Image 1 (tube, rainbow, N blue to C red):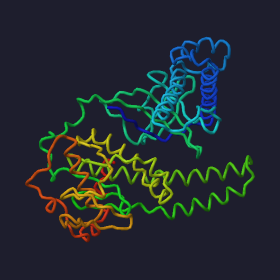
Image 2: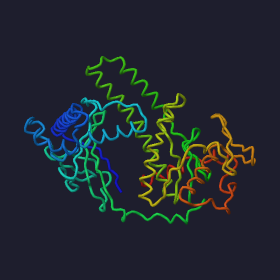
Image 3: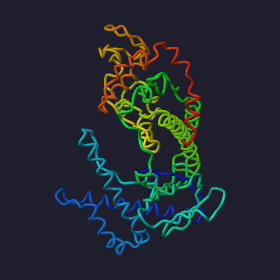
Length: 413
């Protein structure tokens, strides 16, 4: 299993200047790799292997490239080809995309050291600080708020400068699957230890067993963002005051991102600790954001990020997480399967075929749960009627507070 730990970094002014310099040189290397690729004939495009073999020649021709660590330089070449591969995948899916563009200084903000060229010193300082030594740069102090697990191997280290001007260091870790908790047997799953999740509109999530988690209130944060952006619009672009205000805007955006991420960490931790299996809709988030209505709220929900966190935590806590087809979960009756069209403002499910009535999102969550069982090759237990697995009184859902969910998820989030 691969995952990462991220730490706030506090380089000295001298080291920060060297970090800035290396960022700029790696940016130039990335742009040169792109230029070589773009200016080659269509039937003779260089591969990543070809470009790596040219690095010694480029270092002799342009001594500034010789200042870079060899593995870090190779990681920058790999970065271009990884971006190129992602672009091709989007084209294959029918997206109208162009070419990879040249990277400007504000856009290129991170450098990765792969396999070598770095060293973590956990004993140099006290009070939860440690140091990372980057080859040809020096020591970078980090707030070591959580230790690297003993059974984890550090595969790569990345330093990054955020738009706020802050520095961060991330460790790419790899853990042997044998050290992870064993997941419960699939045959032991039932409605009592499994849950379906509907990523909703009125509530952030709605579970098949009647729990809801409210939306995160970000109105105050967005009001502050609007104020700071208005101030930025009155500054002369390129001036010192503009740069200072740009950082203030970036800090507000960073605060919003962190608040959403913290919220998601707590919810996902609670889910994987509470249940043996979690089933969630496989949403086309990009398509949903392209719709004109409610796009900002959908973006704030960060549903794809939520699912990603849920999947990687499932391995850490021994929980099954399965994505199921999202189409029709709202229309389909959880009891009899008959589809009934519902406009977005209709919040109750009332089946004309079998008479089953419940909350709209509760019905969708139950459908997700049943599809999850089908995805794992399990049938819905005949001894578990839908009525007994799902509360039918909508007040039962609204009375459930998110406080207990968040408190439970905050342990080990």
